[in-house]
Length: 422
Image (cartoon, rainbow, N blue to C red; front, side, top):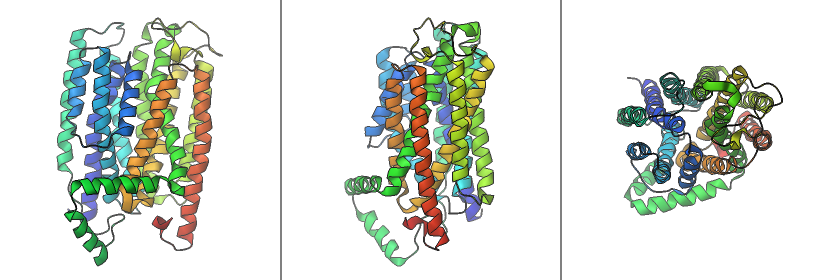
């Protein structure tokens, strides 16, 4: 197998492994719909402060906790998943970077994102057909689902062992000089505690650089809209009594169309990135326009009190007659816009911070997760139009900040400077 084929193989295995693990995780979100918002708040908060080591087996522990729907089990499971996610996503960013070069980072980001977001499709498809028309989920149904999810996540974990170490040549960010080789030898002699302290210091220094601060605004927006489409929007759909008996199954159908939008975006931008002469900005511009259209339609189609409606739902009227078709269209648009932002953020982070990929991706997930946690908190109190306004503001400034970083990068390339030196 050639070096390039080996790297592509690693990216595909990485994406498929995440697809299996997040099929379990995303489906958990719909199954545990009642306390899901608060449990994910614990997950995101724990993730932002987590810096230790973990094993992906924590996911299995979490699934068995949720088999018994007690509040403490949701929160305990969320803590375990938060610890696991802190390491898992940082490792993902590093793996993506070392298996890419300046010509393939965009393509590989798209491939990974499309495979990852396929998880939204499969889990929600099962929930939609298996639980259609049900208002109460029996213990037997719940047990069957979580046994299946445990097996699926186990398959994803096993797939990680198939990732191969790439050849040393042409790896993004690798310097072949003898000085760096000597540095690697010296680093290997350091103990784990020293390495951890050095990584923490490097992350702190990196997070106050101009480029990272600007990208953090964009990342903050992805955290807010992640909360919205993964938790709040499904709650809104399920709370509208005018949708009739299908309101609960529509949550699963919404997840399917979010997944379709994510997969389409990741696949399309991955294929086009190799021939894209205009950089990343047009994709991000497309993403914000798609999201603004979705937000406007949701504003018209959903009652304002839908996110904070009681268990019985809401009979309030929207500005237009609430339409199932418009609701599902908005799900697709939310997924498509999210893929625009995340694929380009993964691409530019892997390109700009190729030599510090682990700290850079750790900061990326830190900012995204803490903003998602804040959004999960206020989503239980703010009316829908205020939540949409917050995302519009952050989306606008996040897009401008991304444009600024990309323009500076393009200027350095035009002058013949090293893209990574900014």
